[in-house]
Length: 354
Ligand code: FA5
Image (cartoon, rainbow, N blue to C red; front, side, top):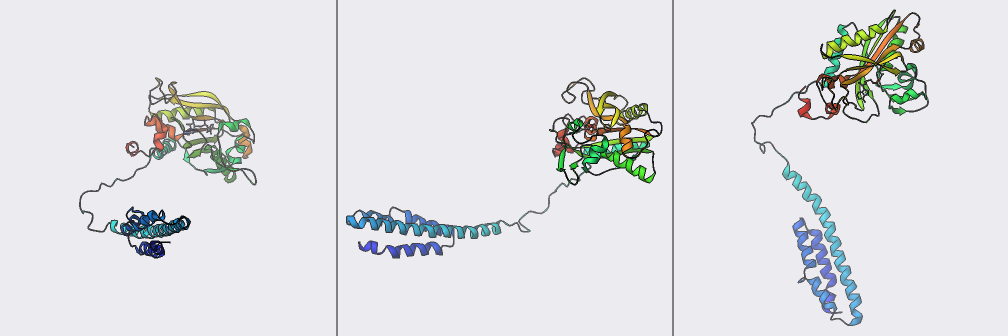
């Protein structure tokens, strides 16, 4: 092998050490450029391979390749080491210190406010309190018994399909779910009143509910309802209709109408759907009300005697009505918001209006 090839080992050690000793990426780049340069020592050796005896060429080529590979390895190790150091130096250099930022100027601070839905809930409570109702609440995580069974909806009853339920635990010891409506609070109130001997009940129960509904102009997956429950002697459907009408006029204004349409709920009999004039189009028909001129606000009806009996209230002595309607939908109608999703979109330009 020629004298130049005898130097290969020294040359390799020299390059590897230079790569390892580099303290910045510029020094590493220099080593790499020399390794690859056509006028560098490795390229010269490559050219000289052709001048060797045929039997020497193979081993010489292999030795050259191995030497190059060890220099490349030293370069990439150094590059990793140096990049960590350089990143730390960069972060240090970028740190803002007092004095870097000019002082003075004005930084407008905005104060948050109650959301449109929370405000609507407060206003609804005020309307019902003025009508003689008390306000109660109940848990958002419910058992299947309170959300369904106590409301006359046994397991596998087809009416369960009316509520697309989000289950947390299915089966033993109990099925636990996110309540689909505020109606389970009715059951809790009736149980408490029976236990404490405090019948009659005149209460509203606002709160958050959850359904596997696809969000659209009138639906959210987490929304709010306000439930109403009156249990007393001699309560009739006329009392229910009167309360609904008085509420509509008090909350939405004297020019808004409400109507009751026959419906079905397993826990009320008879049952009705409660609709109001669409506030977006004032009854003319628009996308929000599916061109009907009416918006469904909730359901209502006379409490089914089976529900009273299940909590220990004598249906021969007491009767009552219940209703449950959407608070988000009230906010939507009150503020003429065409798409309910705007209430949760976090667009400051929209939310600022309330
Ligand atoms: C019920 O939830 C019954 N619990 C109402 C009831 C109470 C009937 C007491 C009888 C006696 P419904 O599924 O129709 O019924 O919902 C009532 C209202 O909640 C709807 O009219 C609507 O205003 C509101 N609502 C229902 N689902 C959603 C949703 N995904 N997003 C926003 N609001 C909703």
